Length: 62
Image (cartoon, rainbow, N blue to C red; front, top):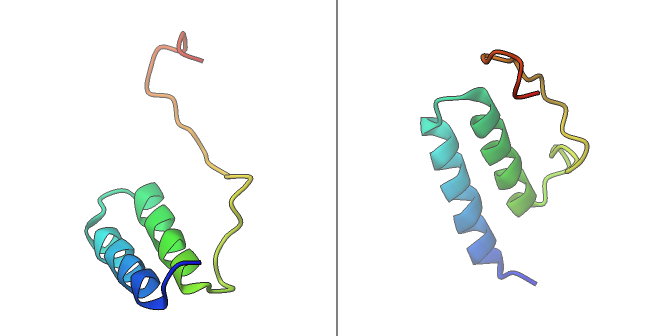
């Protein structure tokens, strides 16, 4: 089990990184990580990850 103080520090670090994140995906994942360290019931499940991928390529990478 992780020490309570360690978990608090990790949650705070994740929130600080989320505050400076430039994309929504990273921000959301960091906030979810912080909630997991807090053992918050508001966290999202690990799977499935529901993402919308927008292709910016020619289509051959699909």
